[in-house]
Length: 72
Image (cartoon, helix red, strand yellow):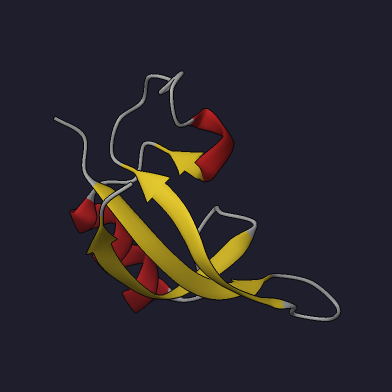
């Protein structure tokens, strides 16, 4: 069963635009039923924790500042 998380953060770049309530999931396969709701696939809770700790020092194009478990 897939886990879904709401993330908040900002885009790396000149304006650092913020975002909130983007949905990510720990599954790598496309969820056909919910694909239009999912922002990013393949981020486990451990990877989310690490991304929050690393801040801008990730390979992602965005910085995750917080996350929480959610349902669709």
